[in-house]
Image 1 (cartoon, rainbow, N blue to C red):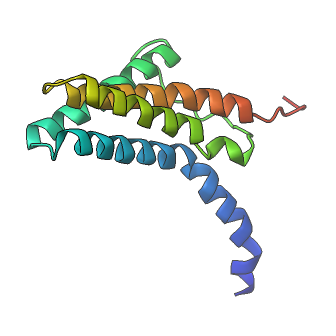
Image 2: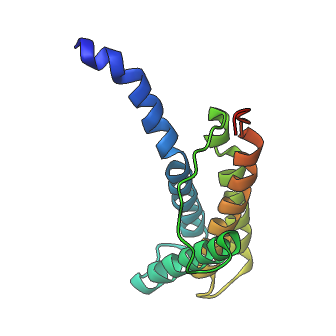
Length: 141
């Protein structure tokens, strides 16, 4: 019990810090999918596949723009930022708003990939702003 108490706080901070972006993207896909289902009904298997394709294309577009190409390698950079940068109010909120607009403006099967594409793209772009705003400068870097 002493060992758990000794390391729990540090490990809890590690878990919360590592979960930030995946937590936000889970909120984004779930909520924007729910908005789309509310507007268009339950998807067929093909429509669900198209939703996934739209999300992958959105991720690929932002990733290629951020890394300068599709062959770039992820390099985990140490980030020090304020916890509030992972609350995702603006990144998820703007994705939900955009998904709602797309879901109501497009009236054919294209709505499925378009909604996921827009939601993913906006989430990542706005998340970059949230992270930048919450970035804590390390004077030793």
